[in-house]
Amino acid sequence: MSQKKDTYILGIESSCDETSIAVVKNGTECLANIVSSQIAIHQNYGGVVPEIASREHIKNITIVLEECLKKAHLTMQEIDAIAIAYGPGLIGSLLVGLEAAKTLAYLYNKPLIPVHHIAGHIYANSFVKPLTFPLLALIVSGGHTELVWMKDHFSFQKLGSTLDDAVGECYDKVARVIGLSYPGGPLLDKLAFEGKPTYSLPHPLDDESYNFSFSGLKSAVIHLYHQCEQKGETLRQADLAASFQKVVVETLIKKTKKALQDTGCRNLIIAGGVSANQGLRTAAIELGKELQVEVSIPPLSYCTDNGAMVASAGYYAYCLGRRADLYLNSQSQEELK
Ligand code: KG4
Ligand code: ZN
Image 1 (cartoon, rainbow, N blue to C red):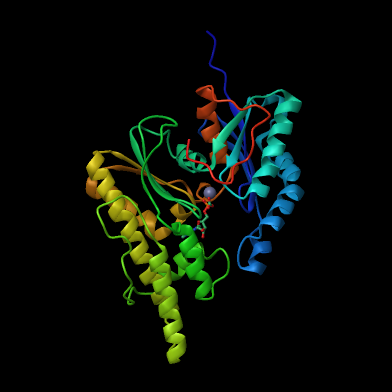
Image 2: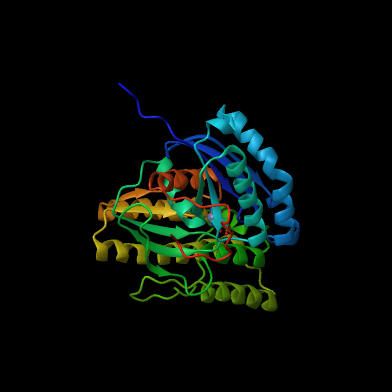
């Protein structure tokens, strides 16, 4: 009896400040996921410097590829297809990964699979268990905050999104103001557990829509910080972090809860870098218990940008017959598809 052949997808991610390449078997089994982070370099500037990011990707990408294939114990000939996160992201950074993907596809005569960066974040949940539809996805990253309804693979219906700042961006900006280094999200999260939510902050866009707004909250924290400075008062940094995190998590959970109740959906997945947030992870699990909804959150190593999520999404796209030709271009802004 003939056995179904295993499918190995190489996934390439270079949309911001991580050069990452992974090999994933059959969409769910990660054989290697190499992430070369540029955080230490960009920390000197308080944020990502696009030109430096592109140059670092160029320096790192072949080394990351070699390391990945070595770890996966595979050669390029044994790879079935190459998945590339072609957008959205920093255009120069995306181009480096895209050119690498196209070169490999041409050289080894492999299909090229276009993957939207946020689809990659969603499919990172495949490493917990294969996605079950219909599902509601709460997307929380440095560039996106969205509630997305999925009836099937690659069927994305946006229910709501942020009207201004993304939640990760808000974390990073608040962290910078209170003196934490880049990227501030994880540091602010850690600090929040050392404090108490004693500061009163506004709950942004507390309405019946599925949209979010974080710029007002960010301004309120910055205003509070400067007020304390002017009065010569010392700000209780950990208490401020706890107050900020409480409002953010409550806002995200409230809108997610409403969307789950309105749709009657039984599956919730959290996706994007901010899904690493301990406050959000705990609150999402509690929400699942309350509504008897199954909740999936990626393991920490798959929350922030990585090649494995691109390879996993690439596998399902490959099965659907999605292909790109060598004219594929990178896109700094792109609708989820
Ligand atoms: O998904 P991601 O790696 O890149 C984008 O697609 O944007 O997300 C990065 C964002 C950054 O803003 C970072 O500060 C935030 O995710 N982040 C966190 C945590 N870990 C990463 N924010 C809050 N708490 C965390 N533990
Ligand atoms: Zn991302």
